[in-house]
Image (cartoon, rainbow, N blue to C red; front, side, top):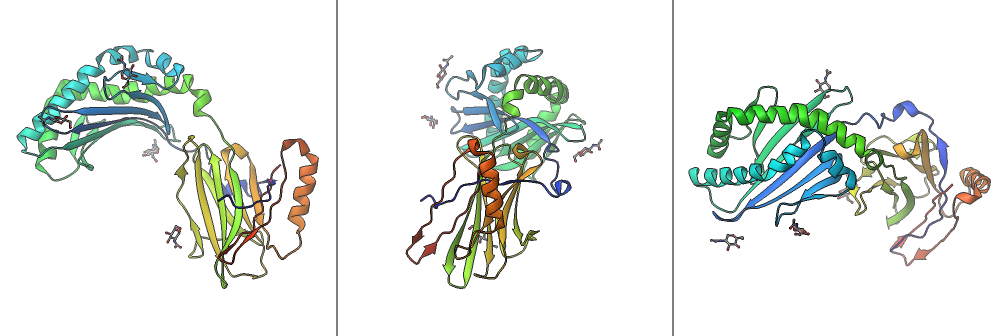
Length: 348
Ligand SMILES: *[C@@H]1O[C@H](CO)[C@@H](O)[C@H](O)[C@H]1NC(C)=O
Ligand SMILES: *[C@@H]1O[C@H](CO)[C@@H](O)[C@H](O)[C@H]1NC(C)=O
Ligand SMILES: *[C@@H]1O[C@H](CO)[C@@H](O)[C@H](O)[C@H]1NC(C)=O
Ligand SMILES: *[C@@H]1O[C@H](CO)[C@@H](O)[C@H](O)[C@H]1NC(C)=O
């Protein structure tokens, strides 16, 4: 059930912009995720998806291995430079990989079904260092990893399979040389630059967070203030509770969820602050996000019994000043004695 709400977003200039880590300073990642399910000696089902940051751009149809581009610009980007050659060869690579896995299962007398996953790509750090990576997992555990600089496969677990796989892979010098080239040069430079050039619009998409504050009363002696923030993109966000204008430090009273994905490629999270009812303090939820620029979203929680305070007055004035920007509505509702909701939300 939607909590009743008074909707009115209040943007305030961020008072301490320095405290908010630069959201641009995130590592950028491009990765190729591959999963192979080997049900028996004569079966292999392979699926593959390419992600730029958290956005899927290419997928492989498991049935026929045909490539699906999520956007027209991806096929343009894929055809550039060495991409075209790789596109004509990937099926050969997949067949070799499948033969290799079946071979390893036989030699190490493993039992089917076997699930093999690999993750390859490049990370671009804020200090402009680029690092290619290629990790392989077997049955959900890390098996081997390719050290790009050393052109060498390293075992990631003490097992016969890991030993044999790394030994066999390291023997194929032409493959390790090719992998180093693909990861360090193609993936980390050409592919990265091309995908980012064509995909700028989608990759730099920004969606504003929508925040709602409400209270729950699990017991007469406890009040839980909930700040629910949703619909934002990109993922990095800062959500804090202010008590009388001061940020509440981390502690047992504060519980912030992890950032969860929505179906429309936006994110959500909630932050819950446990307080004592009628403790005389004022509380507000503060949200900072790249889409807000240097401003913050500040949503005060007002105890229903108190008269509207100065922040509401300011909010209303700001609303009047920019009346075209949105709606304003107020619902107030109390439901039984199991939960009481008091919600304020401010939009401009
Ligand atoms: C191998 O597994 C596939 C997929 O589960 C199944 O369709 C096929 O019948 C199996 N073949 C044998 C020989 O067991
Ligand atoms: C491959 O399979 C998908 C669905 O599984 C289908 O939409 C697509 O048209 C197929 N492509 C080719 C080239 O057969
Ligand atoms: C850049 O940052 C990464 C990750 O923090 C680090 O591993 C790398 O050594 C740094 N490179 C330089 C040149 O400082
Ligand atoms: C935080 O909230 C989650 C989900 O509601 C709950 O499982 C967890 O126990 C809570 N942690 C604390 C420290 O209150």
